[in-house]
Image 1 (cartoon, rainbow, N blue to C red):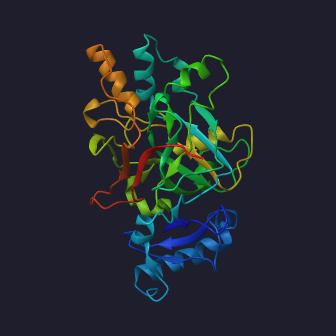
Image 2 (cartoon, rainbow, N blue to C red; image 1 turned 90 degrees about the vertical axis):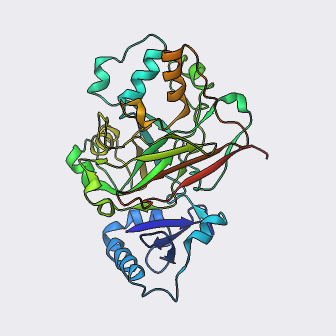
Image 3 (tube, rainbow, N blue to C red; image 1 turned 180 degrees about the vertical axis):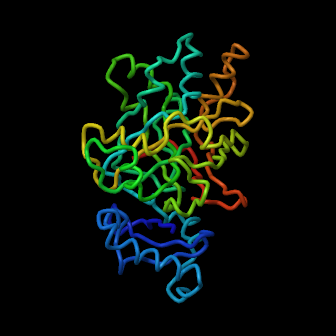
Length: 333
């Protein structure tokens, strides 16, 4: 099934069930008022949400349904999970890390292939799929990062990868906004980064893993992530290719020393393929390849007014999660 959230009346939004082609939706208020409520009571409500989804698919809910695309166009659609209890972002695609390291004449430590990289980011304000990327200055080096996110139920401390697999409730797309020119000075302090990461945006809907069919295999989504910047193709790397760690392993890693509560979002990190012909899911990677191959990074970071589009299509070229479509705007109080 596919679930989304409309903005208001609270910061956690209003849960809605969306049909498979993302044209129609129906409120789920009689089942669960918010996505967070559904996640915390998943065993009690998921079957009823599934029934509502199947009824909507069959056309039995037309009297109560509304035009989801119209709501999306009018900016009424929030992130599926407007506020996450935690945002834990991995770096599963080591071709991305290798390119970063090679550009500064460094190498990837052997431990990175055994122990996932992961940071804890801000989760209190997830942007909707049409909300603008806001920054005070273009000089921050504004960048997109297209990735897959898993939304979990409760996960016990020390969970195995198999246990983590059973705790993944939903999958969605993430634009993990980065401010590239702020990151180096933070990392130089040896204590991680805060300023280098903006608010994240999520796709219009989150889907249960079964919606992906055989494209969901081994904790990976074996579909291409299509990214456009300023109306031009940036890349379409396959999220099932080149991932050293799958989402089962990443969720288990996140739970090594803590319990994860329902409503935790775990990311794969920027989707990246070893073959550069598939392009990129972030501008930084394109710049790094240019720097290594040509001695100069030509691709500019995002400027005010620039557009970003991130979408995943299934094998029939139908959208799975809907598209994240954002413009960069100067932040005004």
